[in-house]
Image (tube, rainbow, N blue to C red; front, top):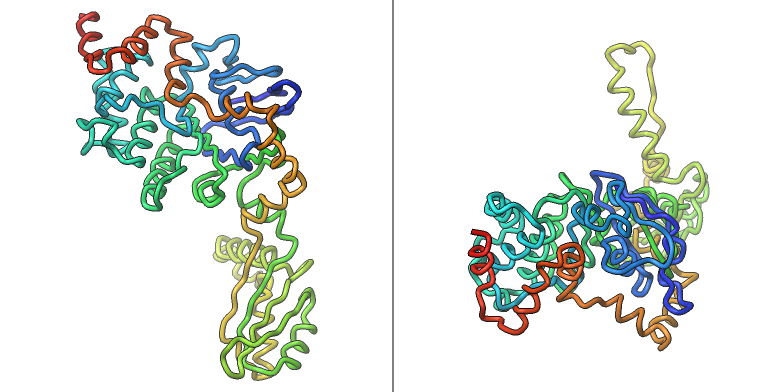
Length: 406
């Protein structure tokens, strides 16, 4: 479990994170959603111990990230937007190096690395230099590195940015698989990505939490009306007359469909006839009836009528054929736009405010050093590896490390 309590990050009067409070429960995939500049990455950097907070606390499985950084970080696997990879290493060398930094016991490293290689489907490239890998494979290596050691909490910052559709689907599948054994926090501004994989969504805007619920509940809260679209073979006057007689049918619009004699009809169902509510009620009652039918054969339970049936029979009584019927509801995109609309102008202003330059720089991160900066804080003996690597990239540090340990 992760608890974020009254979290504040102040950059010279600019609140990148503004008194943020939320709880991440175990065993779910959480989507951390918000527009660019909303404070998502800043919050994640604080949660992982990469930067400190101005105020507030972050508890990772009961450990305060500031007061007990080593214990808290043992519970976290973190993938920044740009994976922190050494391009002159092979995939296996990178994972062996990361295993050493994470202090995975030597006798367990082979099996631990093999597990994440299989998870990320890296078997075919484990001997290749990282510089020669595609962006999709680099993202897989970064994800494997984050999961190495199987920490209970996996934090992913924009994991599908810049990937092609096939690569996005592959990363989504990996995230779903991770969600079966880990708590996953996924930061993104790509709405389809969040709705496709997440059990719960947190929406943040200008550093404040503005919504927290399941994707279905967020869509339902915004869906004050269910929309319907029909293709009907008939005259406009008759179509309007039929729909106006149906309770809750409002905002009726009839137009030409492009097919002779066929009209395109759109309208909203309001109040008790809201399609989603009626359909759910009918489905629930039908389910209850099936479960109890053997014990209650004489009770004659009748499920509530689906409003679509009412519409169908109303037109059938007038011998006017319905050629097609479609329903619609508020999408996650519409929910997001509605919730963030009031703050849109302010967020745009922050993007170009020169006073926030330091914030923008930290938000972007020095991605090549993110993992190692965090680890060196708790394991200073490993700092020399990164320094020597920079001066002598051709040196085999893995071999040297093995020799020292023997």
